[in-house]
Image 1 (cartoon, rainbow over the protein chains, first blue to last red):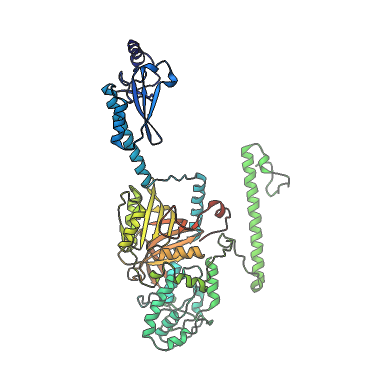
Image 2: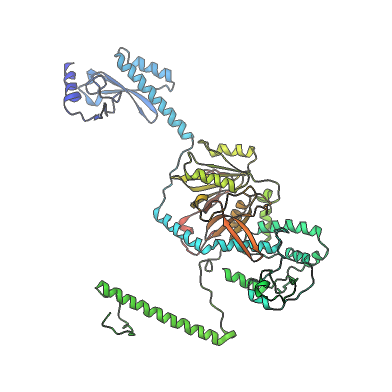
Length: 299
Length: 311
């Protein structure tokens, strides 16, 4: 036995042990057969001739035993005992019966190690069932390309203009009903037509509203449902309250009608000439060409 | 440079890149550019004169080619008059919403341990979308959240994924077994970071604008967004939420508008802004393993052509 003492003297304290890991407070043993991971006189597999460990492979635990008699045959030194029972208590009993008459320290440490191992195996199995985080790698080139595309798309989108256009369209179509007090003229986007003649028909404003509502334009870019649905609601409201005339006129949707001039309130005082009569009540009719022109301009 | 008098043209075999001296090379290049610019201006003037001379008979102005002009025609583009599509949309998962049967109720949550901007983003989204609730996700599995949500009458589930404290992914799940869309989120600007911002959004239901959703897929996504908001917008609130699709990027903006007169409208941005890019659309509720994917972004197929877009 004293040769073991010599071994320990050498590797433990004085000279080099390749399995030893030194940290500030403690020394660890990296040997795979070590029962505790600490580098101690009693738990060094090299310096103890009678030694036992529990090791685990693929979810199954094995008890490895080393005895003095086999110290001369390194190939047969470690004896492997398979732990058949998944049952924790039965396994402990098996350890006991295999390590009967062995020093208390080893038995105790073996059981402790086995406990730890089963606990972490249980935990692994539980974690697999829970949500697993999948890491998706980002490709830098792709990301920068997308970023650039996004910037260009943003510039091309001209969001503010698009939103304003859409809101004005909805105003024209009368989705807002009577909330806004503007006289709802159909208006040209070109302001030159202000000076052109305008027929001041003595049609009432209500009919203008109705005509507006009765007409449906399919703005090709838009999602049709939303605005159309809200159109339908307002149409229903107005239909119930308006005359029969509206129903006749709403059947004229498909025909091409002409736009007549419009004058907004703000324009007449700017011209200074109060010669202009009262606000002209004009009839709104859409001219197909200007509309398609305006659409072409915006694409 | 001192040697060549002004007004000379360059011999045809001359190439600026062969001059070894950097300064002279630079000067030569500048000269070359000037020449080119001059020629271009001359050409332009000439053309303009011709156009004016012809007057009415001038050929129409050429429209410059843009990516939107050159877009490869997608065969799934929706024709507004298409009856089949109208019928489909009358009977799909959103028909309940569009017929006014259900009211949207949205649950916003994040991935595990939300940090920083994600939390604020969730809160701001909740102010923008009426009837939205933010719940802290404490490591719960989505598959278990979904039946609970359905039991409590939620119509939408939004999960915001994060990467280093900023949101970078969004899962939008329509609840009673509706489609699930997974988006990549980019350029998020929170309310604080916006310039010239208005005050906080009020409780009124906003209007919704959906632009440029032209294909079948685009239509589905558009309806997905539309169903987030209540059916009848309150025009009193004068708020509008916009989802604008441009080249497969969906830009979200939230504005308050005011009509100055019937030709001008002023808009003021409140609320967060972000861009989305669709990554996948799945038929049922969220199920990454066994779900039936209606559409998945496949970069090599779809991004190969620069003029082809999906939405």
